Every structure is written in C-alpha cells, then in structure tokens.
Image (cartoon, rainbow, N blue to C red; front, side, top):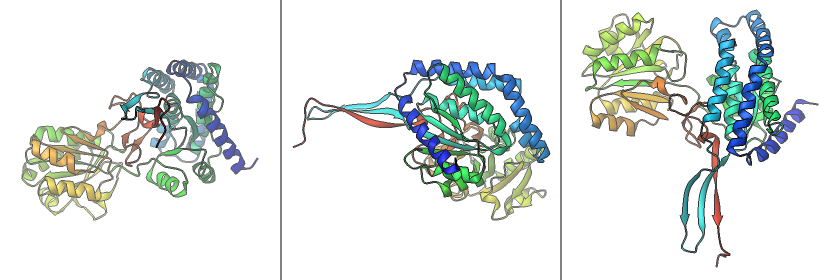
Length: 418
C-alpha cells in the first residue's frame, strides 16, 4: 500500500472511531482510561526495550545530551505516565455540558452544548511522553487521535501507542481511536495535514521550524504557537525584591521552555536601583545579558543588543534587557516584538496593572507572578495538550475543554417558521 492510501485509510478509520467515541459516557471513558494505564504498567519491559533501541540510535546519530534526556524513559517516567492517565480519568468530562440555555418567544428552547471536535492529529518531536498525554486527553474529550512522532522516538512511540490501544480495546474503546503513523518522513506529515473531511484539527508540538512547516502544508485547521518571546516588565511602583525574585525565576528556573522570560523591561524611574542587583543575580546564574544603551551604561559587562535580539526566543541562558519610559512603552514593545504567549508586570500600582493587562495582546498576562506558570497543570486543568497563541478556537494552555467544540440543540413543539 502506498503512503497516501495508508494514511487516508487511517483517517477514515479515525473518523469512524470518533463517531462512536462521541456516544460514550464519562464512566465508560474512565473505565477505558484505567485499562490503558494498566496496560502501560503491564508492558513496562517492552516499552523500556523499545526506548533502549531509540537511545542507542540517538547516541549513534550524535544527539545532544539534552535531546537524549528528553527521549529517555525510565521506571519513574513510566510511573509518571501512568499517574498522568489516572489524573486525566479523574478530570470532569466536558462533553455534554450545557453552556447556556434560553427560551425564544415562539417557544423554542435553544441549548449550547459541548461536543467533541472529532479527529485530531498531533505532530510532535522527540518526547515519547507526548504520545500518552495526547492520546488520553483527546480520548477523554471524545476525540479520535492520529499521532505522528519524530524518528528519534519511533520505537518508543509505537510501544506506547500499542499499549494504549490494546488496553483501551479490552474495555470497549472503539478500534482505531488511537493510531500512530509509523512513517516519520516529512511526506507523511503532508499527507496527514491534508486529510480534508477526515481530520478536524492538527496540533503541532515542537520547535518553530516544525510548526511553520505544518502550517504551510496544512489544508485543515492548525492550532499553534510558533515561539514564546515572553516578557517581564518591572514598573515604577514595583516591589523590587519581588521583581528580582520573579525575574530570576522566569529566566533561569527552566530556560529552555516556551514560557521562560526572554526580555526584561524596566521603568526608567527604578532602573538605577533595580538593574545592577537584577543583572548581577542573573549573571550569577550564568545568564548572558544583552542590553540597550541605557542598560549597557549601567552594566559594563552587558553586550549591546541587536535589533534582532528583541524578537529572539533564546531558549537558553541569554536575556535581552531594555529600559522603557512607562507602562505604555512597555505594552508597545511587547505587542511589537512579543509572540502573544506569556507576559508579566510587577507593580503595586493598580492603574498600571490594569493598563498592562488590558493593553498586552497575549494569551496569558500576569500581575506580580512569573510567566513560568503558563502550563495546563499549573492552571488546574490536570494536563494540557499544548499552548496556543492563536485566537481561534483556543488560546493559552489547552486542556479538555479546549479539545471540544459546541453545537446547538433546539427543542420545539411543532413550531414552523412563517
């Protein structure tokens, strides 16, 4: 069978499964999730053996230590996956929720009700845990899922997907509700994202290059974020001790993730009091500073920032720093150079906080807290399938509700339109 026919058939199978999934009760879905978790536990040896093959190939291919770490599965990481499945089972099922109901003068009762999206394709890179996270979240929200992982984790992903499918089907999960595309070429991605009428939404998870490639090839809706250029703005009326704590955490707690701070903005009124302390603390943690003219004047060790630095997602211990006139200038900078992901203000001034939260056009906007909280688990969603910087149909961390849409159900008593 050629690749086009193979993936088209997977799409047809997923659509058939999705139609059956939409009718499952919350209790039935939870029983199936429990069976998935049990099968992951039962197949530990197979999963670890498959992962060992991927790790050996990765080392031979010269993957970095960081990539190998993301690829590695262990007993503890399998335990975490199993717990993650149980956590999703414990979440409230959004399907069937009545968002609103109203009565028209003609007696028609109209209800807006949450329903599954249908078939979701997930395109992702080296982390095998995404296989489990994506499959169980999509399933709990009543969706069939087509998974396409990266070549680095090919054997691990296949072992995990087989375990989920086998466990689920033991308790009545529709066949083909969870499918993994074993072909890891770019052409396979193209075939998946062009399945018009079969795939309802594509979610790419990975670097900017992958996400842009998926968006350019797709003929079906893509929910995405290209990068996370996140900012912290220290206002004139900030508690500077709080600002220091937040800025250091936002940059160094985990610098290689999309919600880490990439640019620090400081009000000119507190620049002299705050920046020497802050930059010294950041440099102590290994951060390289790239600043504007005023920052370099206050800190001779800072490198002059280039025009490109203000829009750069470093994903590393590098930070752009700029002094701004006021909150309006901070908002303008963020809206111009940012990526609409996560941005924070540190201030005791309610008017400044309001101007910031109303003015910044980002998915998540913080007052007196680190941008590192942009995460489904931290938001109380239990888990997430990704973070969207789009505005349609979901924005920010995507949990179960964001994996649903809605329909209108109209109850009548024989009304006709005159």
